[in-house]
Image (cartoon, rainbow, N blue to C red; front, side, top):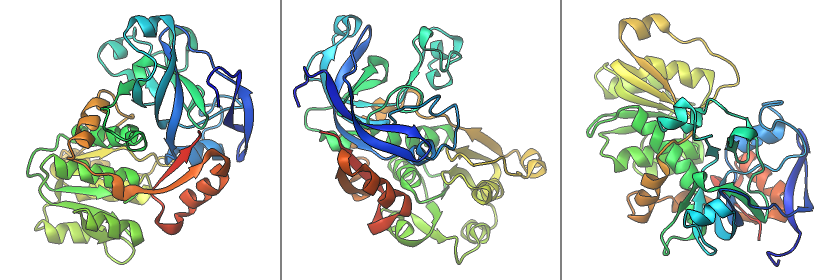
Length: 356
């Protein structure tokens, strides 16, 4: 397809669970935006919730809408401010979803994922694939605030993993893990396994990971000490491994009521539970235990300031995500790809969509 065309193909969500591939107008880059030809967009665990309508009126704020936020591509056109900032045609980029306004107190502190002007387009805030159009399309426009140039030798499909890997890295960082610390990871989905790989790369001691089935087997093959929650008591297994003390760092990546409760109980005295999983409701937590044993629970919103370190970890081979990259589909087969991802068919982990 010629980039000068006035239209492109995109996944269009018209109502919860109703979507199709449509011909839509080509977006135009203005100000600090660039027009990017999409190479790869991975299905994220949040995408099925957006498609299912689990966040009505929030993600997305309205229909029709194009989701997709784990992506990479090549810059085609630049808005004037983006060009003045040195961006040029042919730049190979990876992306994150959050674009802070850049002016509020949180953005000025570098906490742009907590932008105080969230959702206000008139201030410059964006969140691609959540409240502003995303990357299940042949082209998209993105603020350069959420783009990162990648090394020439890095494969673009691999670079599309930067968003989830940088979230996993942020989750590890927020646990204040130090070299030699034992770590428990709850969940063997892509986020859990990426957090495990980051923790190992950063010098963790033993890394326990709770899950089941093929995903647990994959985690074990990549260096984790598996705990099968289907036939083992996770808390008892942790206590046996740690002489009853628990682990100083817990990374909660499953987002279920049970995993959150177990995380709070598995942490050692003075430990930290770093959470990235989002539960459907608000589960009960053992507040008395957390007060008396000074167990901290920390929530994590995406990946502020961790994309560049994540790119370095990939480029230098500190983290290898190739074992997680399981399937590839053209945009036209999105429905099949989504089904394989949601049903975890054929060992599905990171399912790639190729719009072009």
